[in-house]
Length: 385
Figure 1 (tube, rainbow, N blue to C red):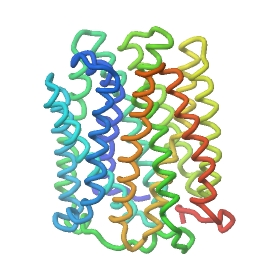
Figure 2: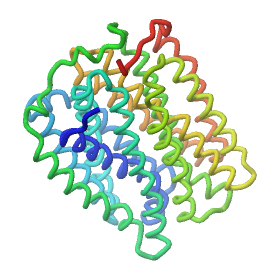
Figure 3: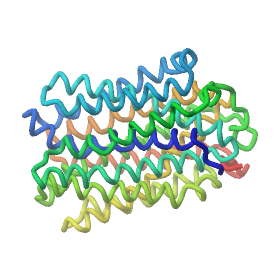
């Protein structure tokens, strides 16, 4: 893979998403404390974010057609920075607006970056997507440490959430300005098809919904669970959340090439089994270090499901990649608005330990739909060809 300025601009844009989006899991607890609301009320913020994903998924193809992919990616960076800044203003309604603006920026990022990489690397789209998501996950690892460290030193969580990515956003905008306009022009990508076949997108869409549901249940509420189950402080729990993100990053960097060369159903079965082992440790651990180790293993298990699932979904519509990317946004929006919010509601009504049983149910559903998403694994479908 020969990486160009366009490649690094795409990687940088997705890395900003990785920081600010995954950072929501680290800031929800202190934000809830600042605003004086319960867990279900602060869970409304990811739901607002999800609404923005859905709306952008329905309209993003037309926006990209008007301003081009480079223009849409630039708009995405600006919107993410503005949304993150608004989330840090100590006002309920301003933070509501921040969640919506951040959602629009992240949605445009997902709809432009993954397709841009697939067009630049048509025979290695799965590897490029996983590499980009791996870099984004590595950026996300920094969030718990920066937010937790800022809280422990008395500087406040807002500094940890904003300082580094805002500086990086400037560099990404400079890189985007150097990308030739032709690199941002949407075009058909017939080389994206898997083994030359056009498979239905429906069940691949369901795979994405379930994979993102499991990921965000852990991302948004694992820190709260560590506090409730093991008595960790908010700062310590936010820092321990990095174990999940380390697992995600390691999985995407180390497992992506092998996953891209295997059938989708095999990848789903292997990764959900690994995630189930990690969840057993996390949920049933008598001591917090064991629970953190479980989070690490869950991250490893879930890691490649989203990037590989996106590559397969886009490959289902090789002549309409932007439309296919829009459908993946709808999947993410439905997932983020659904399972994590259900978990939060159940935890307020009953107990967060019981509520967390939503995760193994989602993993079991993933394993069940795998044969439907990949009906002919013996054909050797591969996104790395």
